[in-house]
Picture 1 (cartoon, helix red, strand yellow):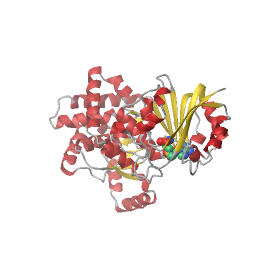
Picture 2: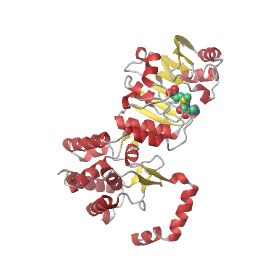
Picture 3: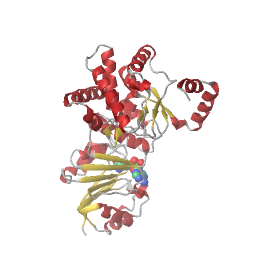
Picture 4: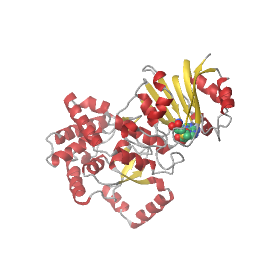
Length: 389
Ligand SMILES: C[S@@+](CC[C@H](N)C(=O)[O-])C[C@H]1O[C@@H](n2cnc3c(N)ncnc32)[C@H](O)[C@@H]1O
């Protein structure tokens, strides 16, 4: 099928009607998001992986007379990209060898009309960009409010720092990274994270974030820095440790703890919360954290940990406390510790002491106890437990 035929088909009434029915039936296929939301969603395991969009942004800047390096870097990237695709056995279409025309046309169109919703960007289920890097760069440059993305296919594209390091000189890499940081600086992270939070009805957080993040000025139901102090975590966490945070919610506590340890893994069952955690990680450029989406009860771990956070989560895991103790015991290194925090001690955990005892039967001794009512509403207890055998 040639391109003209596909274009005619895509613009035909019947195609549009079928597409709109499909989209209505599966409304999650098409999404309206801000360009910053999409940019921060570009990561592989928490590391930004679409520097190609940054180079395109620099080329747009040069077209607007704002620098004199963008187009050279852009041409170099396109040549490297073609070589790379050929080496992977992927055929290059003639129109893909020189994209200057595409870029100029897009710049012209964005500068006059903003984003054209007739041409949604294509993303994979994790919102990784499959097609539309030029459009994302234009949307960022022209500061458009929202763009349309369509979930289609599962392709993962990686133009991360390692890819660029293979083809670019250190001083060029520096320029690209500088530009990336400039773009990040211009992002209203508070607004983007709220955009993600409100894209789905949340169970926790009373309409806002469950955890606050003082570093970014984000309020939340439970104050992260204060909790960190109440638990006396600076007496427990050391730079050589690996930490696991079970039911990490939006990951702000994990992000804070990760500043003081070697690495951290946050596990969370809610998709939008993991999105928030990963976007914040990308925004802050933290590479020693892995946020994993899924049910902790079914998750396998290759590594052992030195410290496990089990904050207000055992109730949601529907865990028998002795079995839960056994599971965490198995995930800890010798002398490893768990911080086990209750839910409401007047409700779900009215039998807290009994639960704690059952947990300890798996081979733990209590080395610290405490209580807190950090959100001003719910009274909780916690214990730091150390592995004994
Ligand atoms: C009450 S919140 C506590 C959040 C966090 N631990 C804290 O204290 O700040 C419980 C969290 O556990 C998550 N969760 C519930 N069941 C889970 C499961 N089976 N696996 C992973 N996370 C789960 C929820 O989505 C929620 O974010």
